[in-house]
Amino acid sequence: MASERLAIRGGQPVRTDPWPRWPIWGPEEERALLEALHSGVWGVGGERVPELERRFAELHRARYAVACCNGTVALQIALVAAGIEAGDEVITSPYTFMATALAILAVGAVPVFVDVERETHNLDPALIDAAVTPRTRAIMPVHIGGRPADMDRILEAARRRGLVVIEDAAQGWLAAWRGTPVGALGDAGTFSFQSSKNLSGGEGGLVLTNDEALYQRAWSYHNCGRLPGGAWYDHATAGLNYRLGEFQAAVLLAGLARLPEQQERRRAAMDALDDALRAIDGLSTPRADDRITAHACHIYMVRLEPEAFPQGKQKIVDALQAEGIPAHPGYTTPLYRQGFWRWFSERKVGTGDLRWKDVFPRPPEDYDLPVTEELCRTTIWLKQDLLLAGPEAMADVGRAFGKVLGAARAGEL
Ligand SMILES: Cc1ncc(COP(=O)(O)O)c(C=O)c1O
Image 1 (cartoon, rainbow, N blue to C red):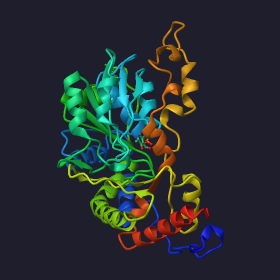
Image 2: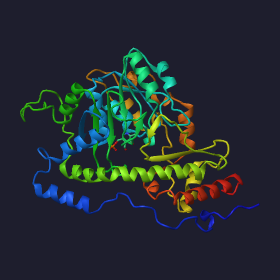
Image 3: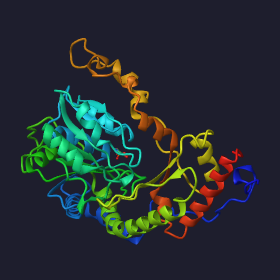
């Protein structure tokens, strides 16, 4: 029996109603921006950045926060503050944004990739031990899509090996593992407020920690090497200027007030997606895990059964988009296959003739991690702005997936 005609083939789309726009703002942001403008203090000495640090730390039950200009440098600051240096190895995930690896390289350290778990898209703790060498100093789990990584096993492996843990929580605002918010579960954690994020200042980032000495080093590194309470032109460490400005802090504070309600809406949408998509042949929905007491709901990830859809995910994503569903192919290339490695490999390390390719314990292009490879081929993303449409709209997503995957299985795509 022929399936319903796909919109991409000229049929009726499942949905024509618009999706929520992102970012969302209102009189609160307008007022906050004008107040920042009229304060005449747009940067150093302003009250909004410290207020953001206080509120964000409080919400995540962390003792210290350092706000900074983006999530990439937040990682860099956390790595430096945690004492990671040239030649140190940092174990991390290859199913993530390039900044995770680039920040490690930026401090002269070397990312070592271990594969992820198929059901969670997060670093597989079972593979950590085999990746540890005498040069390993840190583990950097990524709470990808806002789903906390298995912090019990990651922290346990780190403790056993004497390693530092820095959480890349760029997508993890308000996510919690066994009731404790992510970010300060390890030694430090970092967040992004870039424009696509659930909490956006256009750009922006933040480091959380419970460790006072690490906080002081982070603060110094993000503020030109000054020391907290020190004189303006005293630069005790070799820091750079990674400070956040008052306008961004103003918008972020207004956004922070909206965040809990928006997260509830996204959470309800994710539950509705579980119901709408669970029964569709050839599709896997996220695995439930009682230890995840709050998901940050940045991305809802579904997996296509690799054998069921030989046409590949891009064709399916195109067909879903034609049905009015803003599905996204997500990461399609494991991080170790990105072009920047070739560029980096040829760069000199220090003053001698040594180049990065001589330092990598394993040439990045030699990695072939099966689960990451598979997920890059099979995972489709539904992002936070779609989730804001609430549970009712998720029925349209379910109908569109059913229609498109039905047609794909019938060889009509
Ligand atoms: C997992 C992850 N790490 C790091 C970053 C870097 O954050 P930013 O874009 O704010 O520099 C991002 C955001 O894009 C991210 O998604």
